[in-house]
Image 1 (cartoon, one colour):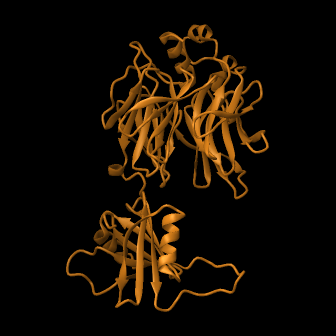
Image 2: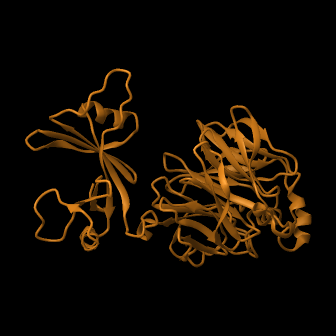
Image 3: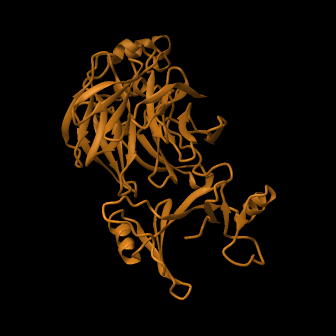
Length: 446
């Protein structure tokens, strides 16, 4: 496929504005690849990225040092990619659209040009080999992709539908249909990127310049109708932080949209950016560019530091820090969290002359503290359910002293582990309305 052909395909798939390859401020360039129709991405446990290239029909691997290589060659046009099972799931189309017709359109193309391209979900193994193909119905265009338990949710850019795909049975059924997901005035694409965050599925409609969300109930089904979240130019693929902040490229800018609806610009010259994903520790936002425009250029993968923006904190600046659990056998429990869940042991010891033994374990962004008291945790009879003996949850704050004084002024029930400090308060306890204990610690405490 020539450069012009790739640019036309990228324009149709990404619904982006023509642009060059200017590096956006605040973004560091991680890597470039020679093709220019980058679409979806994910970060793997080893820190490397997989990036789908719709123009070259392949997946790129991008290592942390920026080294790139072709991870998998595909016989279809790959779009979104998620980790699934021992490998990956990818939305794709078997055939490419009529590029000449797209060029003649001179703007957003008609949905009909994308309705008969052979939509499918590809299931890949850990090495990128296709294990199974799950074809969709003619008239559909499979685009955005998200995992929901053992199933997959797929956005359909031509049929105003979110499909539920069950890889075990091979069945594909409508999960949500709504005119709000349709292409406006018959333009392509309608429903595009999707992200599951908390109890909601967030959905971008590119041609409607809008973001929506729908509640997901305990059975994994939609609960109620679509709720309008924000108006934003040409949303494609995006990320949702733990606090509900939406991070997305839009009209050559990188935006943050708070749960309250306010929008701010993180980078004002995010030229060509079309998809974003948070790193596994939520401290980095990875962004890919389509790389087409008057002067064709390579596809680029950027990284944006979110840590300084506190996009994973709430309005008080609080972040989840760790949770404390009382255990019967500190050695056994420490080994379990280390060996089974893969948490790293950062500190172990005793306090109160051996009456309390402890172990601190951490993973990126969260930790578990285990304590064993001289009086053992509650024993239960064999075969009876054991409720976790959690002691309290811990939040970190950028300024514990200021937070302490704010809560004190509101008349909240506060306490400390010992005598009040002579200087600023560094750690304290606050009790909720039911008497549950919550600990506040500084951000940099291990």
